[in-house]
Length: 196
Image 1 (cartoon, one colour):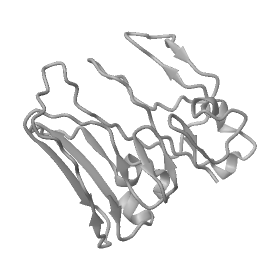
Image 2: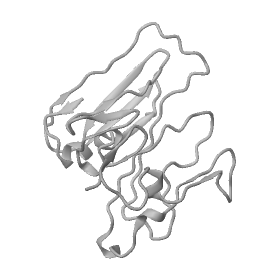
Image 3: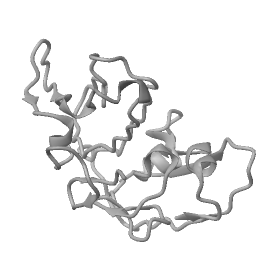
């Protein structure tokens, strides 16, 4: 997909929703840009295992999103600007998902501003079977805290009933995104940083 206008208004003012098999609650609901990894209302050139924007002007996603009978993808323009949308949705015919087939879900949240020294929750507690495919993090450092670096916040993953202590604990956000010792521009299949 691409848009006739690729500014902050179109990236954050448009919302994407996805519904599987007649569900009333969307399995995906996020600002269009953020869902396609263009965080903070800014376009960038990148690629990873599931999303890409080779020239920083497109929205590409190759995640399989199986359904049994119906799928509905909705774009909602919540801005006052008319935005042209050029899109393609590819589907296969004849698939026979069984009861073990999992539906695709995406979770978006924003915390602005965050609270100093309080954990930022990337994904809240969820129940049931599933596989975590990854996340896209967008961050703007508060100008009041220029002497405080956000990167040492370790990423914690609580699994299968963990309460006090998580199963997985990282060494810092910069290590989680595959960089270490600060950030610079890089794009990789499983991690990357598009900060300037």
